[in-house]
Image (cartoon, rainbow, N blue to C red; front, top):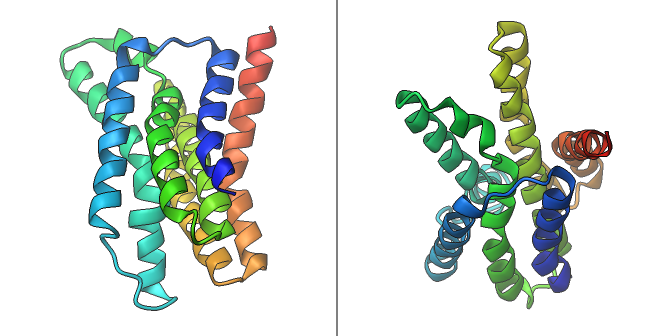
Length: 209
């Protein structure tokens, strides 16, 4: 299980680069350094939200420390870059920046540090489920963000709902599986991971054309 946590993100990053052919070399160093710093801070300081039980505090721990915030951090950083460059009227930057590749590369150090820190627990909710949920956010959220380029309210509203639903479903999937409620765990996992699967299939189809 520790090996799965260690290798899933690098393999997905390589797969994504092979599918899309995008080159983020200019942002690759920032992604690796930023991801390494974020992973190290979490490892040294421990959880920012202590899970006092299984209810709201455990869900918030999953959101802040385990699943959502670690995966959303690189996407929010990319969004900051976009806003900054749009203010400077540099629209080409928006077209060339690959949110997904940046986020997957950022998460590679997180997967390595967490694999080391969680290996003694041998808990599938951490070593297997959490990396899948990171990937679901890293690929699924940019999939919906990409629809913003159409600048039409009938497209932006559903896309915004997708951006909000994926992190909520990912945290809830971790929370349900941790509490051994597998029925709701699979439902939330399907909601969180479905956009990732759709985005990957569509990227493969576009690459083969």
